[in-house]
Image 1 (cartoon, one colour):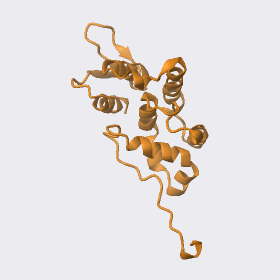
Image 2 (cartoon, rainbow, N blue to C red):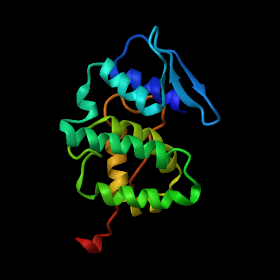
Image 3 (cartoon, helix red, strand yellow):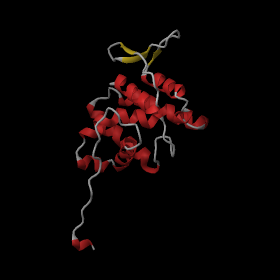
Image 4 (cartoon, rainbow, N blue to C red):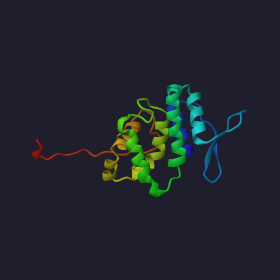
Length: 173
């Protein structure tokens, strides 16, 4: 999955020449073969490298605090979201929903690499949720829908209907 995400990230970033990737270990950790330099290992390391290569430093966050928040969410993606147990899904969604209560993006009001990689990581979870469950996590649903409609992000993933239209009977008028 991570290799597909990195290929989509390359397309989003507008990188012309695709990189050569492999995986290592049981967890299929991505490895970027980097010409004469040592290989880069891990989704976050490679994704940050790609953002720098594309000259898109704003995706890594503005200022020390912004960069720290982006790194925090990238780490969350790898340590909590990837390979989580099924019974942890509700807890992850609840925490994310609470966090996004007053934010447009994970790093506040700025779209970053954290939004892209968290979107890729949470896509399968949101895809499997029933409409009623999506309505329980309204902030996650709002954020998810916003990110999936951000130009160039979705690439390899199918669109997800997040919130149904609410219909009101005539007695509410």
